[in-house]
Length: 205
Length: 212
Image 1 (tube, rainbow over the protein chains, first blue to last red):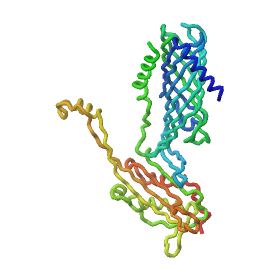
Image 2 (cartoon, chains in turn purple, blue):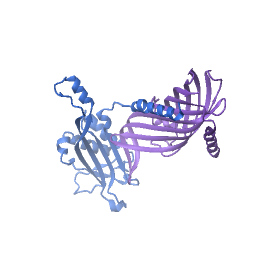
Image 3 (spheres, helix red, strand yellow):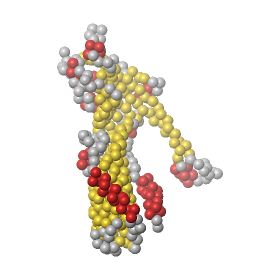
Image 4 (cartoon, each protein chain N blue to C red):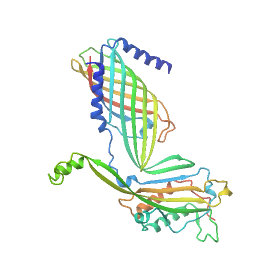
């Protein structure tokens, strides 16, 4: 964990030195949950976006910050949810609407292969925070659980030049938020994990 | 273009274009708002219970309940509850003067009407263009206000321990179940039976040690 924090600090500090060359990607994100989290929302959702701002610190290396939002919502009919209510152990059955809102705020770096003006593959890694807001609605009752997770997000992708200062940014990313808080589904811990395909437009040079 | 300006532009595009389209409607029907809720006090010695008694009337609570709930399904509900308890080992006591049952089961119903008010610009435009200049001439530059009334009903079943002190319990209601939902859509005998059966299906602990 200490190494992770130091790495993030180095990445952020290095952006102060090379702030004159940057690129920013605005991305549409299609994401699908992974792991036990999938039992809560089992759908691939196109409701997501991301913003990634990177500064060049070397010929092939950029560092920056990325933010993102993904949302999933799924319906399960005739489901029973158990919970505690005062002195009672309770259960409620009905049509459940499960919704998860997740924000990602991370510092990250990319290693971009190739040369400017070429189609440039890249690999990236980011670390920071992932939030998860689990909402379980059944009838007129709502259960809500908000958690912050330490997270990591490795990615691979392509930068495809379109014009002098514009590129298409395509990437696949695995986002993982380490266990935190309580799961509103049948799991002993709540770790948020999802795969995302991100496609967007990049401005800058 | 500065970084700050670029990021502001991108965030504005997201807020205006993407976020409003993110929230799906699942096309839920009236029945999707029905719930079956149960609760029990942990540690209750359900296995030690043998007998129950239940009044043959569903108590209506509240001024609107008689009108909204009616009594068409009372007999069905009471018989379905009794049948479920008997299937779990309980024996029904009819004459409580002759025999004191271990638990009393009370069934109550309540129903209420709620009215919500909301403003709508769409209605204004629909009416405006649909009916020409008639009803809204000169044009009314503001929202229209509408109301929506919905009725919510609930059936509550409470199991009360008759030997509270003897068993060292402090809360007399050892098990409670309720069915609730919007009083609309297709309420039928199979539907009510299914919901009452669900009350017991999600209460697997509610089994006696055997009737005597």
